[in-house]
Image (cartoon, rainbow, N blue to C red):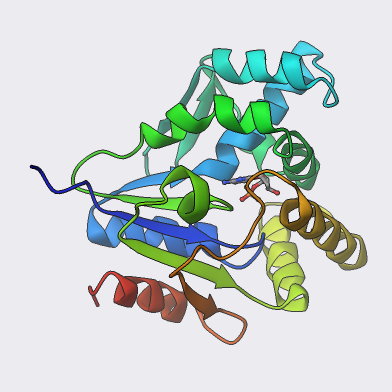
Amino acid sequence: MHDPIPVLTIDGPSGAGKGTAARAVAARLGWNFLDSGAIYRALAVAAMDRGVSCEDEIALEALAHSLDLVFEATAVPRALLWGADIGDRIVTEECGNLASKLAAFPLVRRALLDKQRGFRRPPGLVADGRDMGTVVFPDALYKVFLTASAEVRAHRRYKQLKEKGIDVSLANLTEEIEERDRRDRERATAPLRAADGAIVIDSSALSVEEAIQACLAVVGSF
Ligand code: DC
């Protein structure tokens, strides 16, 4: 019997610093990286482009099955949807909010399961999302729930978007983050919660490097 390919799941609400920490942890471990939020965001882009209503679960399920999405692990990582670079489009708040709405549909989530599990390749995988430890990789060896206060998360997201040249108001952003959190936590299928046995890390008072070290410590590598 072969040992299963090790997985570190990093779940948590938006703006907790998961993306940055998870990507860095994967790079340092030399493991593969799954940004599952980017898959839901790409589906949102596809729905907008193809005129599929975000209320139509059946049409969204079909779209999810047909999604031709490739992530290139280049220095600046690229996301190609049907061959077109959608990197700039998936980072917007509009896209994140739409993704959160589509992600509440059970048929959509099921349609994206195999795609996500396909990222589990040797020597290991760091998987970033909402249900990585609870649903997608319940047998993961290492599980983290990375969180931070809503205030800190809104500030971080604000800074991130500003740096990308995207203009948003902090008040609107805080409201949107709270609404998205509520939707992600309260949905019936695969709601955002800490997986059983997950190590909870509150990054409110941590620097990016400290958050990375805390995640690496969970894998016993620091
Ligand atoms: O991590 P993110 O902000 O890029 O994710 C965008 C939305 O996608 C998030 O608000 C909810 C949904 N999502 C999900 O339901 N399950 C995941 N594993 C990842 C993201």
